[in-house]
Length: 589
Image (cartoon, rainbow, N blue to C red; front, top):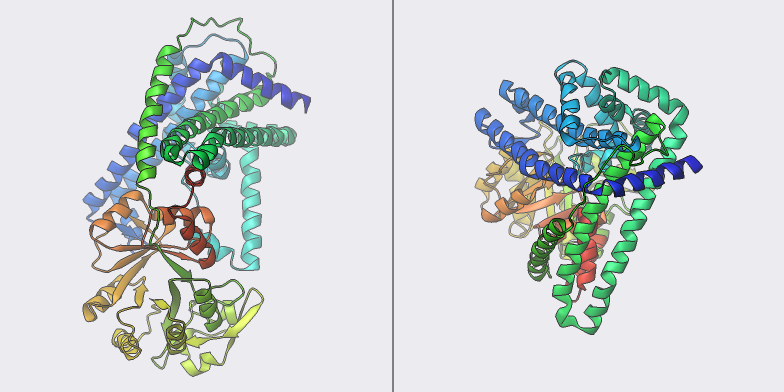
């Protein structure tokens, strides 16, 4: 532990001594990231869509899209560009730390040239090892270095939710995640070894990292834990101190609260960017120190620094602060105080109930859901049963395919979930209960391929019978059927469900239901122009719910309608600006 503390103190010392170097490097990194990397990615995607003739990419057409020769070439180029960005970003920091810890004089151009000499490995088979290395590090990098391009890379929530829906799935997920994290930690030194040693390959760097971590894994974990803990405590302390004046002003001088909130948010945004950059610098210092065992060097014997002037830096910081403050004041003033986002209960209310059952429907209505989503399928006798899966295995523990059974057979079965049980319901049962509860349904038609030719007219007739054509919603992942349904009944609100979407959407339906991982600001604005409603699924984290309610999307589909309703209620004119700032900071960082 003594050595760990020594390494941390030396890292802080080096970063302070070379603070102007770090300011320049991080400024260049952010400029390159936001002015080149992000725009290039967007341009390449639009180019791929134009060349291939696709309007947008979905789960139905993605295989045809990615197998197009031009797309394959562009994807390879994007992957290479991403790898090079990570290599230069972290490699530069590692080389700086290496020289600083030895008190060696350095200039940026020679460091750049040293990194350039290793780029040849990116055009060889060994680049595959680097891809594997970064994939293993992704869970760590996305948390520790949130300002890098790894921030938004994660498994879509609908995949993890399906995996976590069973005990076996949770155990398998935990086992795989543990293995990935362990391998990631043991290979974490690959990049500093590769960038610092001039004559070593990626594969040899990987092997050296593995051998080193075999004897130094505990020390490495302790240092990483110290870094993260210190970083989080510092963020918390600064946030408390910075927001205390706003807390007082909102209660004593409400008229000055808006301006104070804008200034406070701008200050915290700038501080958080600095702190995350500092975390990257600390990370590189610690990695180099434990790799090359240089805890107490870092002196200025070989380095001379010219006297730096603070005025240009202060001037730039002041300009950025003023611009951010004005943007925040404008944003807070125009923020949505009473969003009309619909709260949609996913398969009813599954807390204390079985999904897609009458009890779940009643609980969802009592929880305040505006709409209740249910899944229906057509049975062998042409009726509609409320059930999500194609088989009975998960909920009933029996062999049986829904499409091959009659409605009467299915209604006799008891289904179980999370220690609760209930009977399978028909669409008629759910509509009757929903009408009694005065709540509307969002009906998702699950297409299994054995439907009757008149499945859509039968569904329409069912809705017409109960006089709910004007108040209910119908959606399906089968876009063709939904287009037909819209033509059949123009006054029915019809939508298409997407688990994946990239690119602009021009569907002739009333709403789009899209998995949250693929919802972008551009898409939200695009759909508002049509206008087409946007339902985002499945949002089960407070952060995700709050984010999309603040954006005032048309609907959020969630397993927790009570939580979503409470979060929507909080978006009122009486909510303090302090709470809005804390919410926004939590969502951004």
